[in-house]
Amino acid sequence: AVERTLSIIKPDAVARNQIGAICARLEKAGLRIVAAKMLHLDQQQAEGFYAVHRDRPFFRDLVKFMTSGPVLVQVLEGESAIARNREIMGATDPKKASPGTIRADFATNVEENAVHGSDAPETAKKEIAYFFRDDELCARTR
Ligand code: CMP
Image (cartoon, rainbow, N blue to C red; front, top):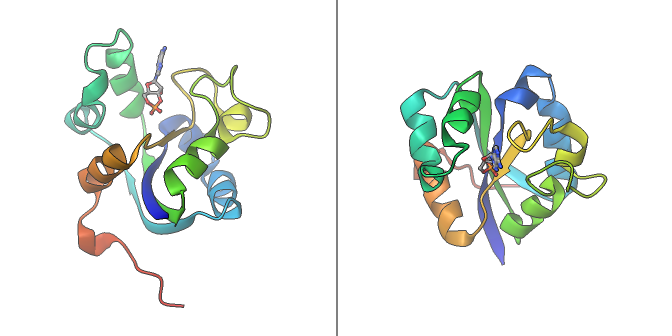
């Protein structure tokens, strides 16, 4: 089925000028960008977005990292978009990511791992709504 998923190009990749290279991978994989905005998250926005990880030992560092510079937040649409995006991102830890995946090629380590992608339909819905109003998603017209 056609799905939507939330993608974030994280501060490490934005700082390295890798937005274009990463978006090219997303588009080549058949994912369509239907919404995009560049944001510099504040602490509350980052904490709210990653609330499920609140009790993890890496939470404070993660929030610090995610607020360290601008990010590109996007909604991607396509057939099985959630799984497809996860497939091309590769494993969270770039050491474990398959060759040719975005994280294998652009991530620095398990924290500074270049991209985020929603992991399931319910989280995709929640994460998209966290950053976008319904009328900010652009339908395809041609
Ligand atoms: P993401 O897919 O955005 O979801 C949670 C983020 O926490 C993850 O990518 C990494 O940026 C970070 N993360 C996950 N596991 C660890 C870890 N073991 N140590 C540090 N950061 C982590």
